[in-house]
Length: 498
Image 1 (tube, helix red, strand yellow):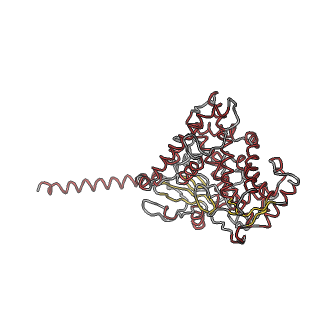
Image 2: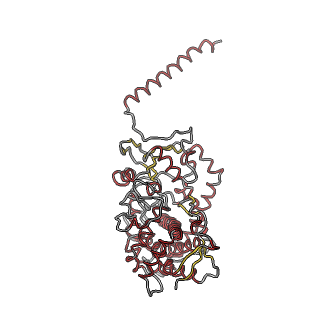
């Protein structure tokens, strides 16, 4: 009875609370200028626009951009995501507002793998990141340093050619051989030697595959919808990550432990040696054991799959276009006439080779640009972008934009002959390596491997498809992972050119 008498008081209190809340929101909105946000597709509760992203995100986002424009604001769970699909917008991000967009979103998986963000690729913007990026650019991946490893590349490409030439099988699996080539080059340059297995019996190839698989899923559901992070346990992602992290650390610890004996006291002949030498000196910042391991892991992860996948797409594109293959072979064989193999000194003369490389990386762009994040509120092309907004540059869509490229779906290397467009991040219609502060520092390294391998393959062999398959039937379907890989292995018949 007493409760019933007091009930009107509860009602008045609730009503007063609601009126106060409405008044507060009204006053707040009056003081805060309305934001001019980019256009957005309709969203669902909790998941936002995640349901609109298919198995090939670059294609899904490209289709949405056709409807909503080159700057489009999505929601991945609770996270605002700006999708950029034009060269003009990319220029604003990479050039005008590069510092404002130089952060990385937190990825729980990448953070765990790379020793709590001690690497370059996935770590947040900080003074530490600036120092280690500078070390990589000046000490590990400069033009002179990359050139110093030319003997490694030439030796490994020669081994590739020998394996194809003396293969006992008529059909050659180029996917496997190109993967082995890049693993061996990266291993020798980064670690000082090839690795099949280490002393603990850990397979380097399998370990690398596990790392690539983890990084392909580096954005777990918990990154976008924190209260659903438990799903990562149910799917087994958490367990796989922990297992991979343990094996990676065991492998890298063995590399560092064995390195002094392996090098016999010599220094500066591979990345581990260089980093250990920097550690002994005064680097001006903390370069401890975990920093060294994370940077080596960065080089291994970034330099292997994307390089071998790029090579595979180039050869597949040449097979699909025999007239272009013939034109390239004519150039390479003329310059290499009388030589048993192409050396790096020959590559500068091969203009059509460079055009073929550029065109393949345009049409079959393999590396998806790692997302950025706004460090502050930014006015971008008239729109208000809030701090913390993630940014996805759809370089695939930009590279196929018909307003920028004539017949963009065609494989035409001639478009790059006598063209100033390059892949170094200064031409925003063409971004295979990204641009700005967060651009890939390994451009020189990747291109040195790619050009030498392709030149020697087309110099030495004539290619055709096995079992009488027609060139027009060659499957050029891609599968999305950490990079855009070919769906099926590249099987060829390689006949030595006389």
